[in-house]
Image (cartoon, rainbow, N blue to C red; front, side):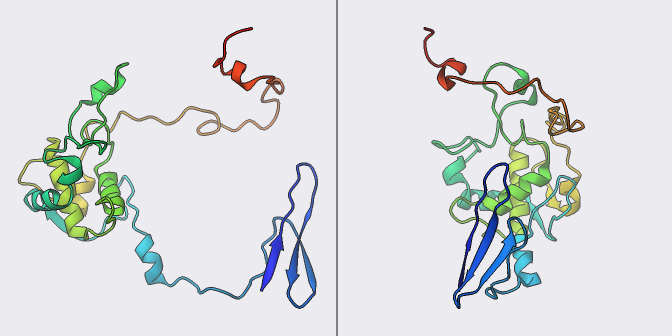
Length: 219
């Protein structure tokens, strides 16, 4: 058994000392890879696969399977309606799933952000349902059941017909109403070439955070 102590102080280089129980000291530069402790096990491929379930916007990661709107109606009634309502209207503090228009997102009012009005990709809807739903019993739905639930949600929003069947190919081909409603963040640290020198005039001295944020009356 060993203990690792790390000291970090701005502008100076400190060292981490590994204290071994039998008395020897093993110094290592802070930030370097720590010595292996010889505990734990290497994650096996099948274990990693249970966590590697993300689905990308283009459909990469969608599993084999299929489901229909009709099948989804049964699953939704049993596993989803108690929180989201029979028609996706939402109950209590649980979010609504149906309603609104993409055009309402550009107004100054509080727009309805539902699957039909806000979500840009049908594939990420599948991903979200698969990873997090039903509430309190996440990841209990099979791939086929998730396709079916995704199908009924899209049908409730008028995006696909009521007799539709979804699989990885047909789901990835769906164009959502708000697909073009998102844009790349224009902030310099996200999109533009990062500034490396002469990036600002100097530090701003804030004497009072409350006054700076204008949450207290003026003197």
